[in-house]
Length: 559
Ligand SMILES: [Zn+2]
Image 1 (cartoon, rainbow, N blue to C red):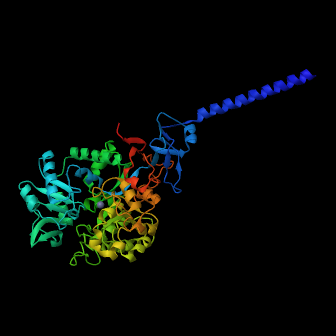
Image 2: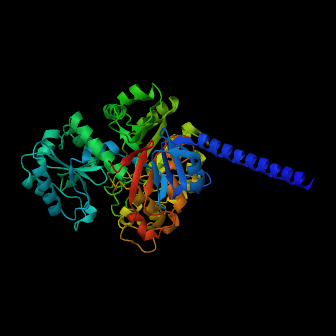
């Protein structure tokens, strides 16, 4: 009896043990079977998703160019198998950076121009031109980036020394803001720009009644457009170089602020060939051709190109006194700036865009330009809306105009580095009172709860991390001024990161496709060697980009 009971108990334990083993085997088996395939798994890091909650996780899984999941390293590595797993070793991941306002195409073309950024004198400018001419000896000599505000004599230069140095070849030199050019006599002769052909006397700088060689706005554009265009082959090479530079600083999307049809056609075709992987939100110049080809036909979107907006100019730039101000410049009481287009024309462009469902993005630097465009927008938009019409730069705003941004849901699109580039001389142009409401990014953000940030490159350096740093610190890269320029208008780090990712995407109606690392969105992301959300402020400009991915493909560094 005792023996029987013992055998019974023993067989029961055995049966239970076998059952347990079976269950365990089954569980293990089902685990292996249900492990899904991911193209890439990044783990052991800190992945800032920039979702609504601003949540972060340790790992990220990517498939077919899209984010499939973020989560803990344990959860993600258990759920996904992959042939490409990247141990982040504590490094941080952010959505690919989006420059909300730049000139990608022209930055590319500028790569073959003499680099005049930061030249400290006329003599240094001539030296750089001579060196550049050795590399590109044929044809027109072009340069970009001079800024007389950096020179001992802060007045506009004339072309006397330029003519002596280059008497026989045409020279066209764009000012740092792109709104002024310096031409030598040969370039003036070839472009036909002279006293008799000037449409608007205000668009030239005069010295004792004579043309100095500096021309502004439309006349500057006329001179730039007269320079023979490079071939499609060299444009291709230059754009590929431009995208390499952009991927190297973590940019995966750019809003190109003003393109012609032929430029868009080249971008579209290079993207379709797989040569150009940079994603472009192409704002249309208001040319008749663009209105006929795009605006009247409807918005256009491929995987990498998006056309849904018109770019207008209301005025010029502050540095060259082209910004349209309500009251005269503090350092030139006979000047109030330049209206870049007649009001009627601006109204017509806006109406046409509105009727065809296109967004309008207008360059407005001066308070009068901002006021004018808010008025024109308001008549069409009538009240709050989700059309996301933008004021580009919104640099100087009258106190009473801030609320109008909210009234008509107009979105400010700013460049944080403009504040820190201009801060040492903007006060001279504007005076103390007006300066208080200039570069007022936080105040602008508060109107609609979001803001778009960019660089306006090639005006500024292409790096989005410099934008991030300038937005949060309001200091230049030398750490000046120590307390930050008008620090009340600094953004928080979260706001600054949103402004160069999800909000920039939203400004282009692309927030459902990119701008954050959420399931189903494009796998556009960057891996940095430091955490820009927690590092000391002074380290921010020095954070290194380790890798950049576009649609799940590693585009930097190139293998
Ligand atoms: Zn611009």
